[in-house]
Image (tube, rainbow, N blue to C red):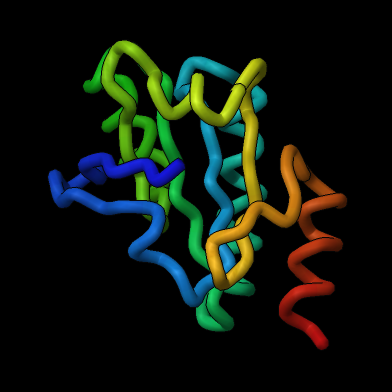
Length: 131
């Protein structure tokens, strides 16, 4: 389970290249209001915890690349943003049923939590980084 996708700037990035950091693998779509709302919250968490070793690897399941790109630009998403090709192979591998969906990985690449949103994610990040 190691997604390797081209990011917003066309660079290939693998999830495993982020070992050593806590990584939130997040699946979303710019067409989902819930996802867009969550991104605003994620920006705040990213601002607080990125320097402490937190990274977000976000995979868009949008079908229109231009909609995805404008959403990333418009919301100024600072993390790794990638778009999955039509088959959504990684979403299938990670058994994504609803959007937004996410998995939190520890520094060794093990999943330590899934589908934490809002306060629950904030609490977990606080536990990880404010000890």
